[in-house]
Image (tube, rainbow, N blue to C red; front, side):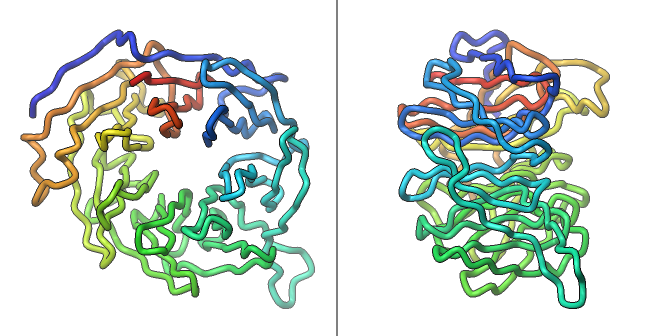
Length: 337
């Protein structure tokens, strides 16, 4: 491969989120509109609202112990958040107040206490109005219809731990099963398909659509690979050129020029040797490679100023720059392109 290493890149900046209270090390999801970036602090029961300069505009306080995690903006630009610990998905107004509550708990026949599926990731359907959520605790995927009704679909893999969802070009929803090492797919009617990744214990994290082709791309945390899956379920894996054996992956995103960016960081459960946390940029030609050999694809490594970050998510804003979260350092990062 052709590579360059940027150890202290001038185009990467980090901004401390300065969460209120004493909890820390729990900065998770982010979603971006034309002016702001919204970030969840799960253990803090807060959502931070930042501008494109990385400055904090406001904090939205969620109920104590609710565990806000997943975020999305629907086609009406309304902000939704999953309160994972409460089994709720809620809509917020422009001031961060909860204005609609959707109870996504499972009410099983013969039981008095509803089961909290732990709605972890939430994803927007291709229609822009239907919201999907992962039942992390129950190996289910759920759907909130525009009328507010809720449906649950059981995965075949037990203890799958579904964590992330994204709409595909085919109009269905795709997701990752962290413990089952599989990619899930659910149609609007609830037909479930699951596709096993060849690499054992790969721990897929995030899955996103290709900018124009009928593929989904995903990251493997422990497999240290990126993967591509077509609509029939055919998977191609590509080893990531990690610097160290204890490097693992987080999420991925395409930029405005269709180059692919992938988060890599030192596993804090296996922190020795210490090293850089960095983001890989693969040239857009990776999207059209035949087979699994990407040795001819140019890439660059962009080291973060901080270490021990445990990066979590990365997304593009409306100006073409990339923003990412650092879970353990409680920072919001920006790559200016």
